[in-house]
Length: 123
Image (cartoon, rainbow, N blue to C red; front, side, top):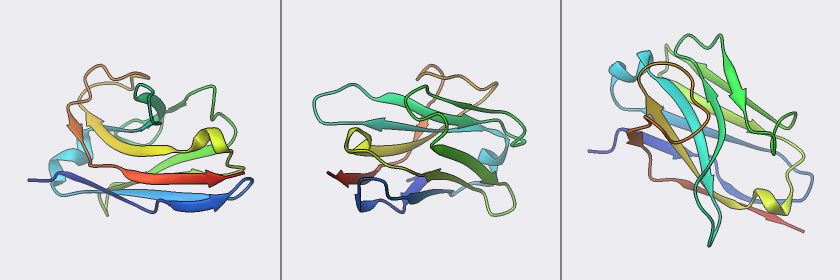
C-alpha cells in the first residue's frame, strides 16, 4: 500500500519554478511531521525541507534556503514544496516523507516514504 504519493515533477530551465505536491492516503498522517528529501544520481538522499504537524514550524537546508517554501494543508492531507530559481544542481528525484514527533532535518525517524518524482533542471 502506497501511503504518500508525490506529483508535480518535470523538466524546467535554470531559473524556473516548480511546485511539488504530496498526498497522503491516511488521515493518520495529518499528525505527522512531513518533509521533502532528494537524491541525485550517485549521491546520498539529502534533506530539503520539513514542516511540523501544525504547519507552524519549518526547516530548510542551506542549499535551498530562500528558494523553497514548504507548506501543508491538513484538510486536504497534502504537503507542497514550492521551488523557485531552480539550478541544475537541484536535479534529483524528490521524495516526500513523514515521521512522528518533532521536525528533524535528516533522515532519522522518517519511516514513511513516497516513491519519488523526478525534477530535472536544464542549463
